Every structure is written in C-alpha cells, then in structure tokens.
Image (cartoon, rainbow, N blue to C red; front, top):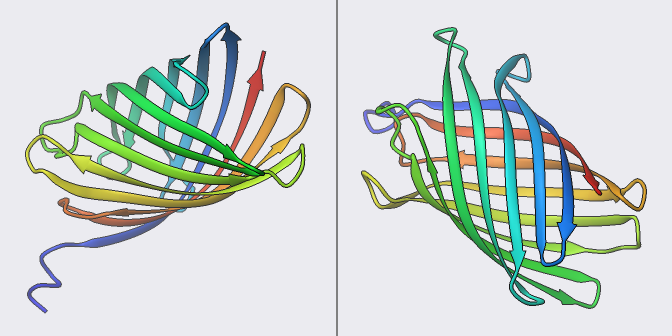
Length: 203
C-alpha cells in the first residue's frame, strides 16, 4: 500500500480536433495547421495551438522536417493558462510494400515550459503501418514513445493509436482515430483515452 500511494493515477477521456492545409513545391512540402483539444471527459478546453511546418524529400524513402508550434495550455484546477513555444526537428523513413505503407519517424522536440515540468526536451520515436484498402480508405496502427533528455534520461510516455484516413476529394482527407496514452516516470501518472478527428487540404 505505501508503494501504491506514492503516485496518483489519473485517467481521462479527451477529444482532439484539427484542420491543416499543405502545399508541395518541388521536393518541399509546407503546411499550416490549427488544433483544439479538450480534456476532463471532453468538457474543458485543454489547449489550442497553431503550427507551421516544412518537409524536404531527400529521396524516395527519406525526409527531414522542421515545425514550430505556438500553444496555449489551459489549467483546469487553477483556471490559468500558459503560452508555450515548441520547435521540433525530425527525420522520417517511408516505404511501400504492396498495399502497406511503413513509416518510422524520429524527432527532437524542445519547448518552453514551466520549471516544474520534467519533459521540455525529448526525443520522440514513432512507427506506423497503414494498409490501403482502396483509393479512399486506409486504416493504420501506430506506436510512439518519448525519451526524456534533461533532468532524467528515461522513457516517460508512450502512445498506441488505431485509426483510418478517408479521402473525401482528390485534395481533401478526413482522419479519425483512437489513441491510448500512458504517462509514467513523472510526478502524476496518467492514462488518457483520446478520440480524434482531423481534416486536411492539399493544395
């Protein structure tokens, strides 16, 4: 019992929704996105952010990307908020095998955060498998983990998600997913059930 009482376990249901617009220019791809996220069983606006990004195609399988995010984090308990800047630099490997789309992405993420947070600098690794049923529907499964670099060198978060993308038109896609997030090796252990929907436009 004393061991169980050292940390408080929290579980929550969340909703993530967003829209993005992207444009390819030769081997570059530029994007802009807006997203809002709700927590406290989808009853409270947890955060909203805008993000701009760029991706460069090195060859058929290798890509590099750079993103900047300006985020407003709302605190439910204190009824306050923080404005946070986040930058990440990543490398992706993509490969097609018949109807399967395999992807591995690794990126370094740095954000401005309050001093009581223990994860402003992390390495994120994500692997995903997508299966293209036809020209319109492509379900996928993905796994991601966070490796903390600053105060402690350890894995402190992982995510597993199931979802599918649906092609609405030649230039627009709708994505729906479920994500289970597990935070550990942190002050407040959390299990989150995330339901998401996003709409993307490719100009």
